Length: 237
Ligand SMILES: [Zn+2]
Image (tube, rainbow, N blue to C red; front, side):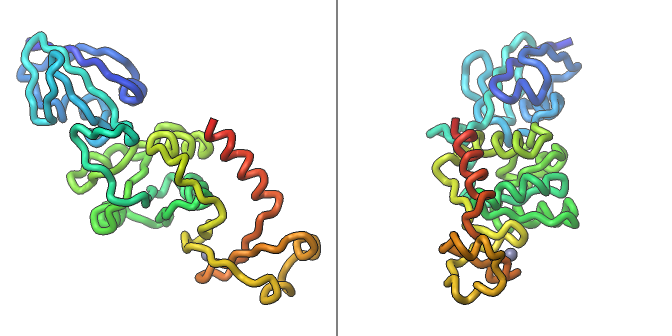
């Protein structure tokens, strides 16, 4: 039976659970199907080499060929196969509520609703050209998904580190600019107008306040903010 050897680079090896693998089929399929056979959504792949030569997803390897798959590191200056996302905006699936909150905490436009159906998610991705972050690989196999990532980590803090690293977001972190509950950009607000509703200690030492125009929640740079900044510093390292 015709056999090919696949070599997986970077986090693709992590997705498939191995770095090198030999596969045989009565009739060898396209590279896209070979990748999906290993559980790797094709949008995670940015470069395909067959015997050292650059190919696309429709290429069909021959018996004895060596196929190398490289991941989509979004901060590489050259993208071989994939279109870059037009904007840094995310939609996350129903299993990633904590990640959504952390993304908003860092200032990223992030849609999340624990009632989204798969169909709604795919519509949002298509219509709003958002990056889909999901724990459900099957969603990434859809033709309409151009930008997305199968989040490997299960712990929310590891998940956010994974996403920040993958999309090289270190220069795009703007904490305390977006409401954690409704994703709305915060606006600066005068202390006097909200003074009666502030806890006494906050009233004493805090001067800068931000308001969510939608849910009216007030934010300030309290101790949670200092913790967050320390955590961001750790993330950068
Ligand atoms: Zn809000």
